[in-house]
Image (cartoon, helix red, strand yellow):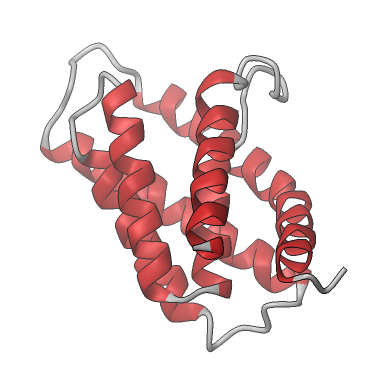
Length: 165
């Protein structure tokens, strides 16, 4: 029950950060993808199943709030959860460099997934691909820079919940 409550609180906190505080927590108008960071964290610390479930639920929630193609983020976040969960045995989870590389890789999967889906199912003719690419690159950079701070906070929260403070 304690694990369920912890996951539920993380879900509420990260949805609130991503959807409601984005305009306040930003760098030059771009805010990090907190949900992607949490999915990567869960993949590295909890494994495939937890990351996949979290990825699907977060993606579905984001799809409900979004005007994009419904189900797109649910699929992409589930894939990111699966891939990062598979990496948890192959990387040193305590190494900051490994975490940064995995967050960068997860971001690339996320954005290439978006690009592929929009290439297959174009939403509008008026979008400029060079602007989207530059904006995506800046979002990836911001997310990668914020990720170690979020990982540190989540590690401390995990120690607190387990009682190892």
